Length: 122
Length: 107
Image (cartoon, rainbow over all chains, first blue to last red; front, side, top):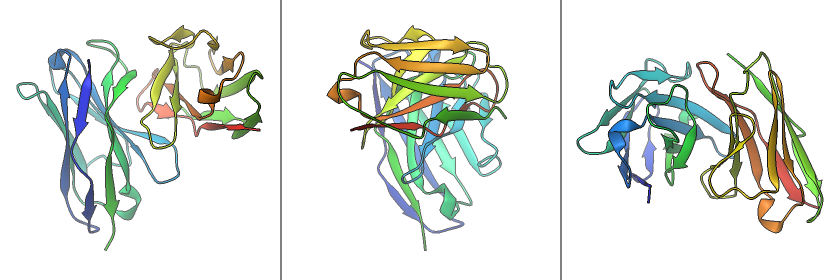
């Protein structure tokens, strides 16, 4: 059974930094791209980042490019999102999501973590 | 960036009725269109991929159709567990984008 266990919620001040994580089990982690998707309170879904399965190449939404960095550790079956220079509009639940197919091209979000709430406020 | 526009924003129907949800893309995405269902307090769930293919475990009453710029998710006969928010997503180009969602409410 696929499990994606995300780290706990955070309250961080504007301009601050934090790292959230997603520990995976139940599948061959190194074969699947991993993704981050966020959802602001009462709002829709917004794709944030994709980390490729083996190369670790990354893609980012313009809204986070240059501030957020997604990485993965295939030896620990974990994906991370480092969030720097956070702003109030980064407040959201952050979901990690596993691609539905191995070595995919564009994201197809088959399994999701439980979400990590991040609140940016002074 | 490909913009996805979902309609209607809210759909109020009764159990047993047919639901038709629309997703229109600002440019062609071929058949690289995905549908998700999200219930309150839960993560989204993959329903339909590549316009018309059901994900594992998705009931027969869910059908996806369309290509190019116009797509439809049809629920043939609504059951109580179907009342949720539905999102479309394109996976044709970076950045991948989502529609703003259609809320399906019980009438």
